[in-house]
Length: 276
Ligand SMILES: O=C(O)CCC(=O)C(=O)O
View 1 (spheres, rainbow, N blue to C red):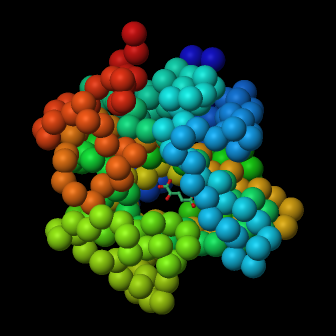
View 2 (tube, rainbow, N blue to C red):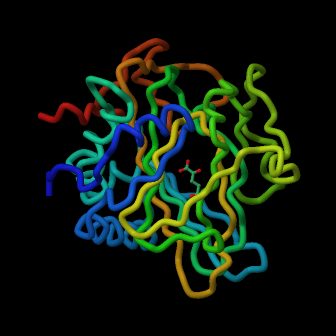
């Protein structure tokens, strides 16, 4: 399954990613890989890898299952992150000679989980600095606005603003994320949606959102009673990325093996492109 990407990447896609901070690629993941990912998701729900997190659904109906660095524990996630066409795709979007895997993450909103994913950008959570960081978000389910399609603020990666991370889920727990005085409180985007250039797309299984680490994004809840929304994201870095020990990043993504300014490397952030 180490086949060339199915996606027909056009120069316009790369240009849209660079200018808007987000683009959709249709048919980028084959049905075979999606089946393996779907199986791996069920395994992680049944027997979660160590960084599992969840929150109760508002109204008590659905369920959220989140986890990260799951490629380290499941052979199919590992194969997908390393051996699928994703690393080659990342090299194109990052315009980078080499690509490292940062980590992968699950965001499963079961049917009837109304909790939104709050507006945020990702890089403030990550112990790295530099520009070449891309995320690929996909789902084995069809994704629509009412089942929790992601929304993005077009061009927000160029604001060059690191928003203070907050914990997802229960609003009472938000205050306890480590603060960084250089980070900025995120404005109430939801209350002023018309002031922002918000874009979203429905996805079919196999389609992916490609977005930059500083692009501001969020998602509604899964308001559908009949479909799951099993979101799976893989994040890759390029040549200009260095380890960064600044405060405010997610402790589960740090590694004591790295000093400030180090290039990323195995075992935590293995090089995946060019392959062996
Ligand atoms: O799936 C979601 O609700 C959020 C996804 C997200 O924030 C991400 O992949 O960076």
